[in-house]
Amino acid sequence: MTPMQIPVRAAIYARISRDATGEGLGVERQLDDCRTLAAKRGWIVAEEYVDNDISAYKGKRRPSYQRMIEDIEAGQRDAVVVYHTDRLTRRPIELEQFVQVCERAGLQQFATVTADIDLGNDDGLFMARILSIVAAKESARKSARLKRKAQETAEAGKPNGGHLRPFGYEKDQLTVVESEATVIRQLADRYLAGESLMSLTGWLQDQGVLSVAGLPWRTTTLRQTLTNPRIAGLRAHNGVVVATAVWPAIITPATHEQLVAAFARKASTGRRVARRYLLSGMLRCGKCGNKLFSSVRGERRRYVCMSGPDHGGCGRLTIVAAPVEEWIAEAVLIRLDSPAMADALAGRAAADDRHAALLLELQSDQALMAELAGMMGNREISPAEWKVAREPIEARIYNISRQIDQLTGHSALTGLVGNGDALRTSWSTLNLSRQAAIVGAVLDFATIGPGVQGAQGVDPSRIVPTWSH
Image (tube, rainbow, N blue to C red; front, side, top):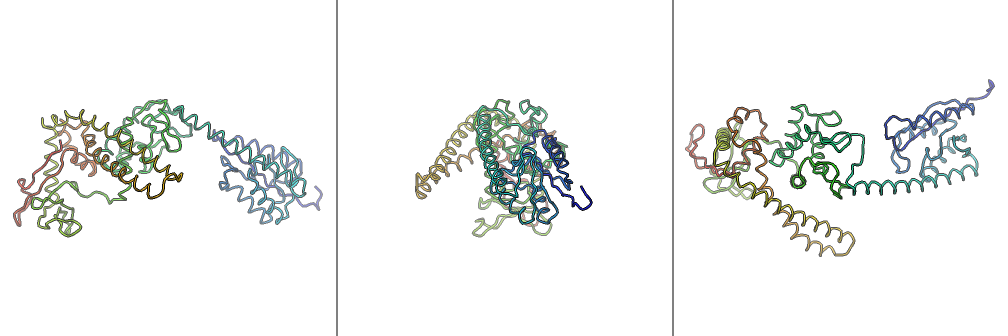
């Protein structure tokens, strides 16, 4: 280069759409060849722009590519070097946009390692367009092959790979990690017993249990884990179970169905504030039989029979929350050690049989709803016909779900029957959601009778419990 020559400031662009190892080796090989070509041309490499593990066919934003375009538009680059035109783009429309940017900026130097293409003349541009069309077609074929392969893998019940192992399984995605499997079973039982996701997430953090990414659990991650068919030994593809998995299950398919249904019901009710009352929904007015509602007066928490169109009670009964909660909690702990509790749970096998039958009915109706939605989407039935057919199915699904709820309360008592005295010593350490789940599994409701005006504390004779077990 003579003293009068102006150096050519070259941009090297490298990209690989899938980096299975995460080591960027494919990109590094592209860069080495591009550097060699730039040196042969006598160009100075002003900057290397790298997009690793990003497709140029799906139209995703490529940060480094966009930055290179901005530098070209600003007149800071005189040439572009890529390994092959398909590394630059696999979309014909994007190639045309790139050419327009280069024309406006006056950039005419474009080099590839695999072919000599000059975008500054008609022949070179024609060749680049042909290569772009070929690359787009090959990408479409490859995408179809990958989708078909993914479907075949799923239908064979095999895992789909991925950088992170699923919680509960080794990196091979087949071998159960028993310590994590135990945690999953505990989480499933406690959620079905009524404990909130927030409460369970806090418990995981308190126990020092981390996600497979080595991070503290979040409610969203926990929800995904508990509703994933994988832990029930089921293989899903695009959100639909397509096969029984080749790996062992951690929970039963029936438990999986319960979890999915429970999450769906809670999602339909919207967000709720954190629980402050142990016996919410479990107390009845001894005067009118209506449900008591939580209410605060100053610093005092109370349960109140509320009148009016929204509540329908008599409005003439109130009881202070703390004493009645302490009395009920103690009564529940005593009952856990009683022969009556053991006798009540002796009929659990019958309840389990009924539960299995209900699940079959639920699955059948859910399949009908899916079939009905497909007919509506294909315009095989009118909106009016769809509405008429849908309503009775939705009603059945609602009623069956309620019956399933009533049968699943026993899961909160796993390991607790006969251990009420031991549980008493740790009761205060349990969060309110866990306490309520245990109480709700034992107590159906308690009727609160009228009290003496101005009386202190709580008169046990006012409380008449009706036990569910």
